[in-house]
Length: 314
Image (cartoon, rainbow, N blue to C red; front, side, top):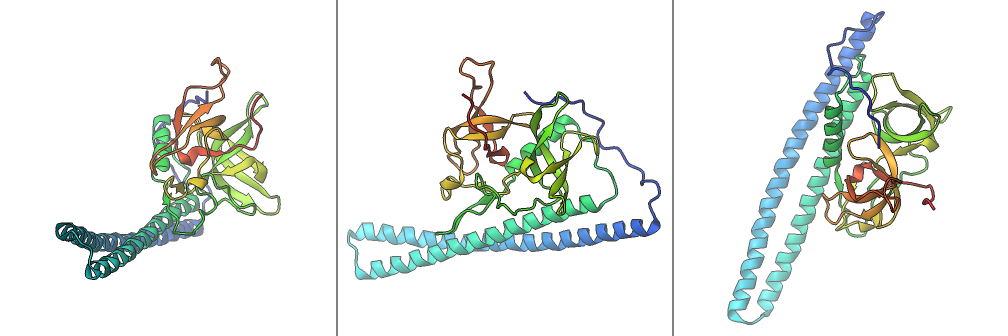
C-alpha cells in the first residue's frame, strides 16, 4: 500500500532564479531579516513563559506538600477539627488557583510555539528559493516529528474542544493557510483518485479552489488545483482522552488514515482510540489480501486520522 516514488538528492544549494530584479531581492532579504527578528523576539518571550511555568510549579508543589503534611497531622491526632477543615479548604483553593495559573501559562507557551512555527512557514513561502528535495527517510521522520509535536488541547471546565482538535472537523467557511498540511483527493496515472498528503500553496477565493503540492514530490512536479470538497484539513491539536474524549473517533468509526511509511490516506476502522494524551489510534485498514478484509491493527497518530464521509464497504 502507498506510493514508492524515487527520491532525489538531498537539498543542494540553489542559484537565484533568472530575471530576478534587485528590488525583489531586497524585498526578500528584508522579509527574511524581519522574520528572523520576530522569531528571536518570540523565542525570548517563550523563554520567559517557561521560567514562569517553573516558578508557578514550584509554588504549587510547596502548597501540595503543605496539604500532605496537614493530612498526616490529622491522621496522627485521629480527629478533624474546625481548624483543620478551614486550613485544608484554604490550601485546596490555593492549589486550584496554582494549577489554573500554570495551565494558563502553558497555553500561552503553546500559542507562542505555534506563532514561531507560523512565522517560519511564512518565511519559507516568501522566499524565492525552491524547496530542497527531501530523501524519503528524512520525509518520513519529519512526518513523525510533526505528529509527535502537535500541541495537546486541554479544555477548561465547561469548555468545548475547538474545530480541528482531534476528530472535530473544521468549520464550513474555514480556509486553510499556505504551508498547512492537508489530505487531498487527486487523480493518479490510471485515472482513479487517491487521498494523498499535500501542502497548501494558495487559495483562490474567486474560483473557490486550492493549489496544493504533493508532499512526496519535487517542487512543482505534482501541483494540483482542487476544489474545497477535495481538501480535508488535518488536526492542529491533539485531543486529550482524559479531558475531551468526545473529540476522539470512537471504536469502529470509519476514517481515513495515513498508512505507515507512506504519504497516502486509506479507509480504515478505529480498532482502539487513544487512552492517554500521547497515545496513537489503533486502526484496521481495508485490505482485501486478508480473509476478513482488514489488516492487523496498525498505529497511526492523531495528526493523520481524519473523517471519512464515504459509507462502509459491504
